Image (tube, rainbow, N blue to C red; front, side, top):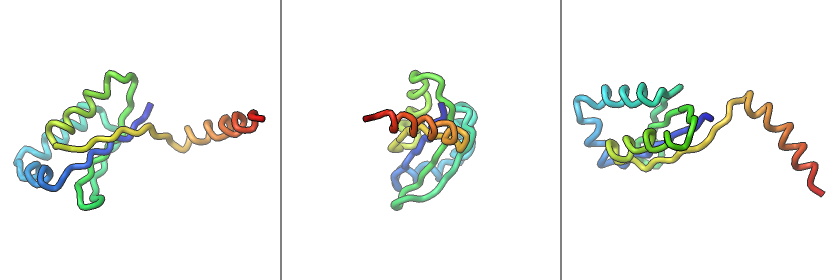
Length: 103
């Protein structure tokens, strides 16, 4: 199942992180290790945000995905299941049938 990992990096931790001359190499290693389908970076509420789309096959993968972000980036980490448009197209008709089955 696809998940969005959203890592919110506080300013102080982010400032230290980007000053590390190996920062981009380490970030790229993380992206490759977790086999991210996509990675995006932006600002929200004054914090640096790193977001990754990953495929999670089992719950025991969650620490492998999240702990490097907690430990190495000092990030607040969120994981959210996400759908593609094709997933939504499959799911909506099923949801409507289910909702209409309630009395």
